[in-house]
Length: 243
Ligand SMILES: NC(=O)c1ccc[n+]([C@@H]2O[C@H](COP(=O)([O-])OP(=O)(O)OC[C@H]3O[C@@H](n4cnc5c(N)ncnc54)[C@H](O)[C@@H]3O)[C@@H](O)[C@H]2O)c1
Image (cartoon, rainbow, N blue to C red; front, top):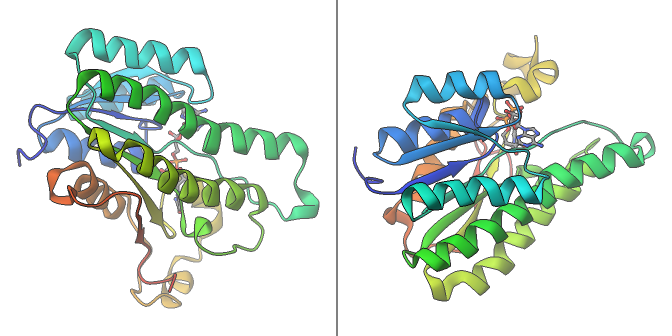
């Protein structure tokens, strides 16, 4: 596959899980891929496995965003794809949500995406090649999820931020879309699904839980020219749960 040949991609939270799967598909499709994370040892290993490049990036840090995008622009003079994937999920009902947990969730899941979109969009506009920004929301950003007050708030925010920013960046041929995964088997949900996989899957229209590759395939579609007329949209990949 060469549909991303000549493109440069940045994936956040790419050391493992969905980010690693997305980075792998992008690299297989011919892109130069920068994997970023705060888990440096895992990130270096994943990058080496897929032939990508690892850079440290805590998505909550404005200066680290500037440094990473600056380095990519210095090396390649372009950034075509921003995959905002990094996120945390700490399940808690409203009355059990501390201010600290709320602020941490907003900082990583929402402010991280704001900083990423702003930094990348500036570079994409300067390079003049258009681009694709993909934000990882959740079905918790399309419907209420019991016990996910802070998480749900941030994922709903991404749904709105995606639509809003898409309207601003369309004239630069920069597309902005969101992906809404259902339950995807990664470290993030391992405690929640352990020993319950079959029971949870049996309640879904498609009776298996999702794999990182399921999300990566949608990300590849949105990163590529195959989705060139799609922007400001929410793409659900959840085995039919939200409907
Ligand atoms: N797994 C699911 O069921 C599910 C469902 C819906 C949405 N999502 C979303 O998918 C995305 C990927 O999650 P995953 O399932 O691969 O989980 P994961 O926990 O395996 O991966 C998340 C990655 O984000 C990184 N990260 C955390 N804080 C960071 C920070 N401050 N800066 C940079 N990186 C940071 C982690 O180190 C990790 O590598 C997240 O945004 C998550 O909210 C996951």
